[in-house]
Image 1 (spheres, rainbow, N blue to C red):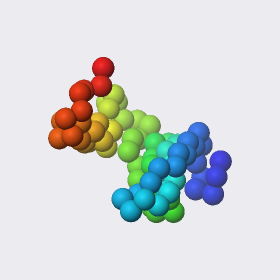
Image 2 (cartoon, rainbow, N blue to C red):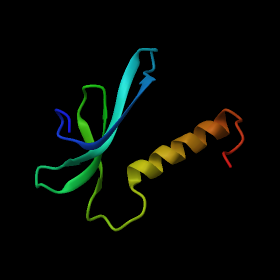
Image 3 (cartoon, helix red, strand yellow):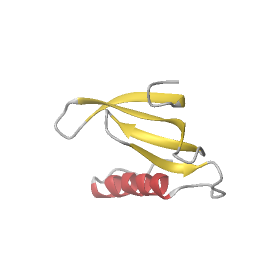
Length: 83
């Protein structure tokens, strides 16, 4: 567990739009009501919840939006779809 109170934390380093390295972290934590949630944070910015433990759906809007954005990028950049 880290200072954000996360469990199963995963961090990777990528770059921002001006080329600076920035850590992106995903993991499990608890919301203010104590529910287990999946969350994401970029660098030292705020933590955003993208799935509650009681959510019955297979995908979340955040995950769906991210996948749609990558598909749009591939289409606009004339990159063939991933198989």
